Length: 315
Image 1 (cartoon, rainbow, N blue to C red):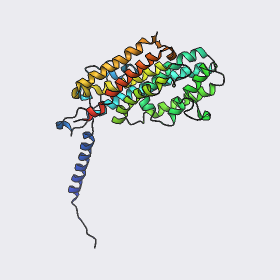
Image 2 (spheres, rainbow, N blue to C red; image 1 turned 120 degrees about the vertical axis):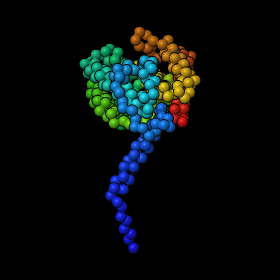
Image 3 (cartoon, one colour; image 1 turned 135 degrees about the vertical axis):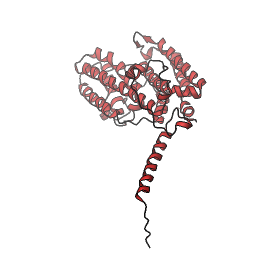
Image 4 (cartoon, rainbow, N blue to C red; image 1 turned 90 degrees about the horizontal axis):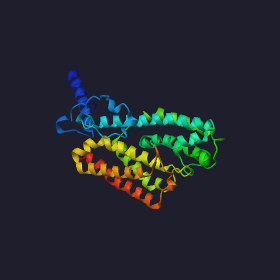
C-alpha cells in the first residue's frame, strides 16, 4: 500500500533554506587556519589584492610582513589564493624564459642557450608542487634520460644533452619547438589546479626530499652540472609555502617556527658559499664533504618542516 505524505509548501521552502545554511556551515568549518569557535559559522572574509601579492615572483625572497600576519588573511582560502598567485607567477616567468631559451636554440646560439638554461628552469623548480600535478606534461618538460623511452624523450634535459655533450643546436630545433608548446600548455592548464592542504604541506617537504635523495647525486643536470640552481629554486619554493603558513604556525608553535627559519638560514648560507656572480658554481666543483654538508642541512630542514601540517591542523 502506498503512503501519501502532504507537506506544506512554506515548510518545504523553509527546510530547503536550512539545508543550504547547513552546507555553508560545513564548508566554512573546513577552513584550515585562524578559525575560533565563535566564527566557525561565518562566511570567509573577502579576498583583498595588495601590492605585496601583486608580484608573486618577488614574494619568494621577502620576509613575512605584519600584513601577512593579519588574522583576516590566515584562512585557508587566503593562503591557497596567495600560493596560487605565486605559482602562476613563476609559471608565467617560466614561459617567458623558455621562449628566450628556445629562440637561442633555434637561432644556433649555443652560448646564449647555455646561459639561459639553468635560470629558466629555476621558475619551474619553484612551482614544482603545482607543475607536477600534470603527469602528462611534467615528463615532456623535465624528464631526464632514462625516465622515458628514447623516442619519447623531449624537454629541457634533451636539449641540455645537445648543448653540453653533443655541443650543437643542430637537430635540436624540433625539441625546442615541442618544449615551447608544452610549456604554453602547462600555463593554460595551471589555473585548473586545486590547491589543497596536502598539496601545500607535502609539496614543501617533497621539494626538499627531492634535493637530498636524488638531485644531490648530480643526476638531474648530468650534462650541464647546473644542479645548484635547482637546489636553490627548490628551497625557495619550499620557503614560500612556509612563509604563507607561518602566521598560523607561530600562533600554535612558535619554537617550531623559529627552528624552521633557522634551518632555512643554514641552507641558504651553504648555497651562498658556492655562488659565482649571480649564479652558482658547476656542481662537480664541489668536494664530497661540501655535497654531504649541503645534503645534511636540507635533511635537517625537511624534518621540522614536515611537522607543519600536524601543528596547523591541531585545534
